[in-house]
Image (cartoon, rainbow, N blue to C red; front, side):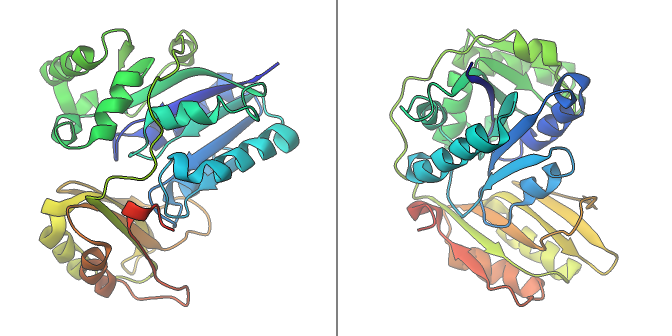
Length: 312
């Protein structure tokens, strides 16, 4: 029997990792042998760190590439390992926030994977920032349009009227998808299982948009004041920032979405210190120049990548 697969998509910062951690804590999922396949927008693997305490088998694809056709070999190798060595009862895939759904489906339609895996549903997570990214990020529109289920997340922030407006926007883009409204990604397993997958019909992505750039900066100790100043300086060009730093009181998870920056204690083990940033209509060099001086380097080399060439 093919191994069932659930795909989790959604643009940067919508709450995919929070939703996944919630699922992994449910009795229905905890009772199964689960493999996770996680793709991130940078090389530091922040989301992988946040998930490793919740799942035994986590496969990370974070060499600076997006979850697109240009890393097909990496994806297929990971799936072959999962099928041959882990033999899970369930696979959950968390895609990069810039992933095209057509690429995800294409990986499971290859001759080497289609008899081993069966996609059960593609769930897309949206939050209050969706209307900000919709006009200029093609991937965010495609993720919603191709979804089997739409999770309207952070209703505690949206409020009833805001949730209704967002529901209307995504319904216009995808009237067939089932919707659910939640806070903190708390979807029900039964709702997820009720979805019926319709494969996405679209061309595979050869490379990410040229307007995007990312850099990953390794460093543990940081200057909090300088970091916040750099964030304020670059916020008009920032889409996403995520990482683990230490302002002097222990590891802190920092997350930025547009002009919103949050911090909370990092609860994982053996953190990989540093940050990854995605910018819009800027360069990796400009992002590095802004943020690198705010972190004290370790002996690990600085990683500096542009998304336009998939990190090659």
